[in-house]
Image 1 (tube, helix red, strand yellow):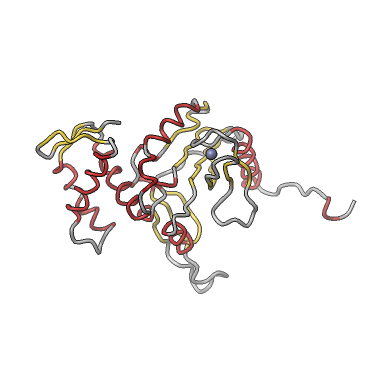
Image 2 (cartoon, rainbow, N blue to C red):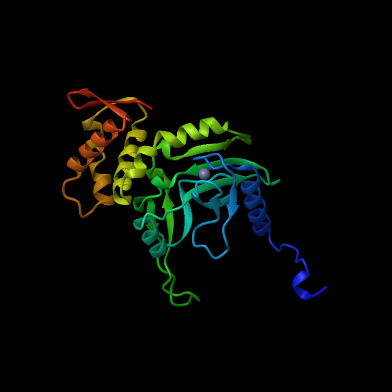
Length: 251
Ligand SMILES: [Zn+2]
């Protein structure tokens, strides 16, 4: 037996978990867009772990022991922003596993919601680090609406594929927009989700103007942009205009 045939034992718990979660996705997860199986991408593909064998949707897998919080650590900031601006963001899979390696939950965030607004740069690494100056990023998922987080495994039980496909289709109207347009829409849908009610008014959304200014410091007409997103959501059937600045969520 030559050296390359020797199977090395996996060294750490995190390596074992990585192998477990990758195998689980390959063997048990079907594409939410077309229900086909996924295949591994070559190891050197940036930010892409799987690709659908039929419709070619790309997926990036993040796995974690226990639940994901509002923030998910991601890779290089500049590379990811370029990727999003070019329309090449992956669909994001968030797999949470238990101590005994069972899948507790699996969320898919469609790439239409993988927008620049959720990417928060971390401080560059200091001069004492091997990769001094390198800047990573976190993903702030709390900006996103409930519709962005499609449950595929909930409480150790697989969700019906038809339910996953329905939820995937519900927001597919965003796919025709530019990455920037998707960003604005994702943010405004996130604000509507935060209201946690079906009926709301323009004034309810204007109360978030301060938060919006932090996200869009160079935009001086936040209110007009907000109204434009509401029109888009109405045209897509996501909300209905009830008159006098009032709206109703259809989903
Ligand atoms: Zn597919």
